[in-house]
Amino acid sequence: MKILYFAWLRERVGVAEEEVAPPPEVATVADLARWLAGRDEAHAHAFENAAVVRAALDRRHVKPDAPLAGVREVAFFPPMTGG
Image 1 (cartoon, rainbow, N blue to C red):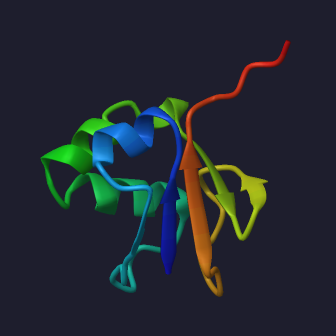
Image 2: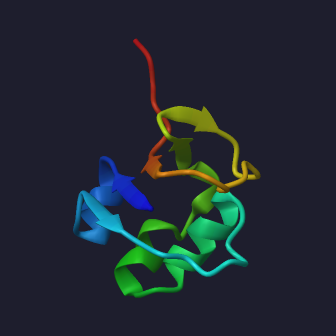
């Protein structure tokens, strides 16, 4: 699956996107964030406060408990402000 990082998440991870193959037990967006955080120091820093990180699955905004089954693209980004 393709992972896209935006704003400060991209800066912390050091790449705008990457292809990953998480293990079968990674079933939700929250599971994926935890798994990514465990990969290395850069990812751990990006997801150190996972509660503020937002996600979209195949370009649809979702909550952390959203399932990953069948998803091709996951985007992670910080909270957005309007104005």
